[in-house]
Length: 93
Image (tube, rainbow, N blue to C red; front, side, top):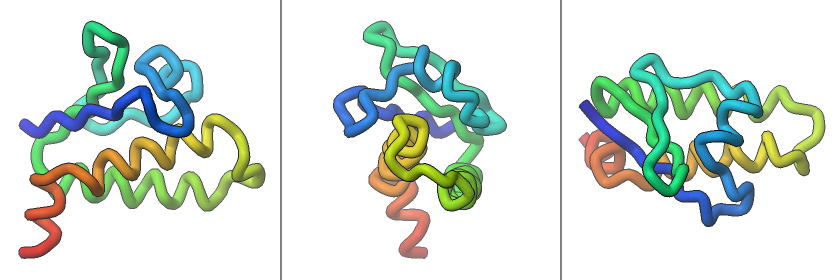
């Protein structure tokens, strides 16, 4: 199991509560909240995380207004996934 935390100090100030309110699709493994309400994404493996990030990139590209907090939140999630050390290692294989 791979857990990726999306810190709430990004441009969108994304928390688990905001993630739920923005109707952003959750990964197959689900999402949870840390004690401080940071968002934790759950994946079976790195490949699943990469596929989810790519799906979110497509979703972000479909949004008309690139200044909304929903768009910023999606980008914060994508950045957290791509910055994960296990995903980066998987990408270099």
